[in-house]
Length: 150
Image 1 (cartoon, one colour):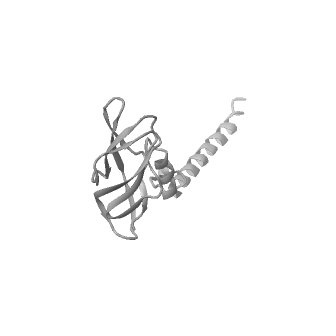
Image 2 (tube, one colour):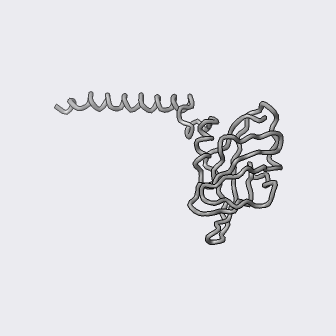
Image 3 (cartoon, helix red, strand yellow):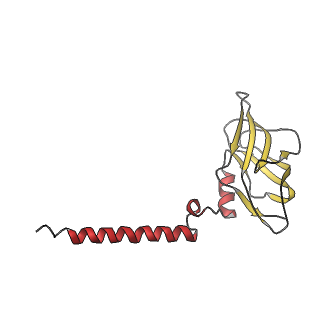
């Protein structure tokens, strides 16, 4: 009588092993970016459009300069003070005031250089000031900004 449940347990163990192997294969093939570590341009654009301080998909990087359209997705006005790519770069002009939902074109100079046709993937950080409290914050994107250099 004690052996009746043994076959069912063995089948469950085999099923669990098959599921684990399938998840590993899918992760290696890149179906889950969080597992594989790669992010496509489409995924990057989707993330950055909706980030706290967003970057619209018309961004362009050439040499050591980035041209961005930055959008304030917060519910209050902010003053954009800086944009950094992998820890380098500065907004070309003085800081920019953005109302809620407002957007502006920004040139960022001094970023890590990239050659025409080369793929890029940068960690982007933006420093801004909350106009209500006067406090300064740094927002670093959870997803890298990716694309092809111009």
